[in-house]
Image 1: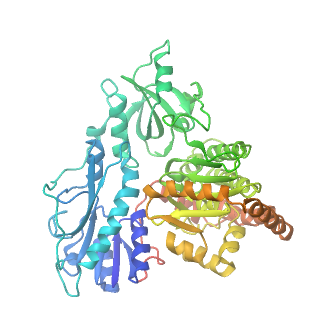
Image 2 (image 1 turned 180 degrees about the vertical axis):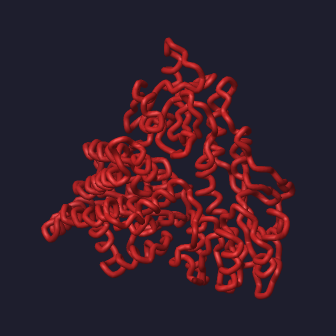
Image 3 (image 1 turned 30 degrees about the vertical axis):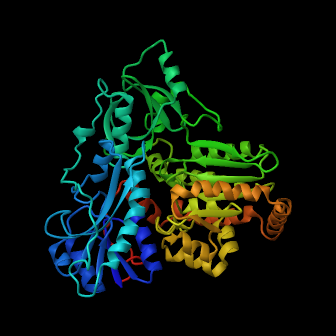
Length: 579
């Protein structure tokens, strides 16, 4: 079939559908829903059999849905209607939720239901995380089922799915006031629920240190932290930062405290930044509640280390759950230090597990953008520091030649994050993972992280150049077939972690482990003799220097638009194949 993906943005769900539908032999083109005239023109040019709208922020014009069947993905169960479906689910503490594929019609979210999927709502999950995982998995499955109900010249499904006994109803947009934090009455659990219902957009409005802010990235305080809070002689007022850890500030509540990792100070140059940077002056005077890499499960931090297996066949498991997968200079330094620390442990396999929702997405564009507003700094200088910092992480992984390294992709990976994964000896993923192993979408960036060494050695020079130039998402199954990754271990994130641990334990216990490590070290030494890693890095950074400091501002413009969520002016031609 010819399927047009009509979407507000080419987000993770749209990318996953692009990959999955293409894998099933459909001819798929994409149009960003910028304006009625543009979307109507796309339908006229492509003449699709079917329109699938995975992510919309406005109604489809009648000129489209009256002409061709349009299947809209709604992130709520059958009957649920309105623009804040997931927000309400998390805010209300729902235990069950769903995703529905329905036909666009005159009434908003009220068309014929073609397919749907239900799922349990994970406790303590953010809206954004549920969307990336359960909603995306359910939507892909439901869209594929709905397409099976389509027939040539049909205006309705050939059969209809059974619906739940109790249907949802219309619910309006969650307002700023409905989520606003009143520190005099908002306890820790309520604060966490409100922030999680608004992550990653629009965030929860609150006054912090006398400044209007939007709060994001909240985490529960552990029993030991709450004991520390209770022991403080000076009882700070609710809403006051009383400690720091990594990117986060510990904010007092009426009954305890909670960590807030990121916030956006309201104003013209509002940027979502690590809380300790957004309120740097206030954070500088606070005590730091640092924790070990290995610690109790309820103790939050960005990095965590565990070990599995018995003596002589142990596996190290290092997580780096950076918000939205972005890696700042500070985080890169912490990750290098963690890698050096865990290399001192008696393990045979080191698994780099990234984050639960993203393995990594490369350099921290918000932090780079913020540097433009700092006296004596610039976005170009910050970009240069960031790319060198993430290169140091890749180099540390490549230099780990005394054990097997594995990148376990629990979530998607993009740009430099892909090549951090490829720096490991083996790369594993689950079927739901989407990779974007290229940089050009960010203003024609050349890229670093030793990609000119890492990608060709996996897929060959020609295939490497094709991947970098075509700028398309790569599903896990295709990534395995092409050699970009080594194994797809599970259908989804829920099953992946246990299988990855089991596979790593098998590697560690394999009698061939000594020979495999010796061969790895020999290959690295031989490659170094032919062309040192320093030469790859110098060549890549010379090209990156032109992106950062050269006459072409494309990278700076693209980064600014991305960070400030500027509306798209057109659909990139590599996506809009009908153009």
